[in-house]
Image (tube, rainbow, N blue to C red; front, side):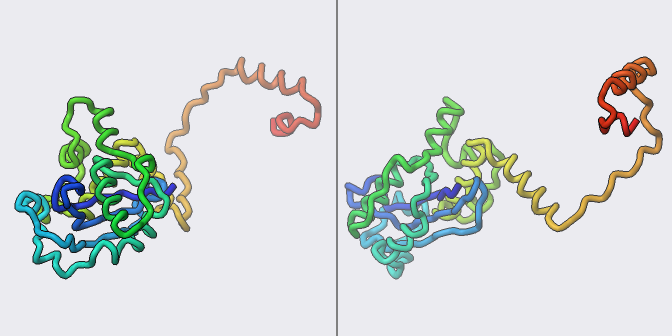
Length: 229
């Protein structure tokens, strides 16, 4: 099963107020395991950067001025996500912004039904607890070093969200353990177990063995059990 974890950074909170996407990060999962395939781009929003937004992601208008427009990256982005379910934290926010950008370039709209909202999953699973990405990473013991060092970033956050998602759906540990065992065992024979230095004492009594032999003799003469006795 192919899934795409998606995160965006924007100039503000609402595309209807003229705010734009400035960064998109995607991480591909297959059967709940990261494949290593990613999509990442910065975007020129063709507008100024509000101070409040800059404090969140530290992406300035000067830095973004020579980055591609969304129109130049739309086809590559849509090809990467394909028709896979989209794993998003606060899906309504990101889907609204992505659809606003897609509408500008007459691209196919993203249906809300294909989004798996990890924020809603977390709130249902841990009612009353913190459900931000930071809070969930701390709950699950996920390393936040990259985020602390580099700040908010769409690809960094998509990678963190991928780990959070696998914890939320309960699929991380068994799948990873199975995959690790399969990788370790590939092309390698297991060493035979050594014999016990002191054999275990028999647990079958003489009466039980006699009853078993008597039963075997009631079977047809060709019975394989009788030949082994």
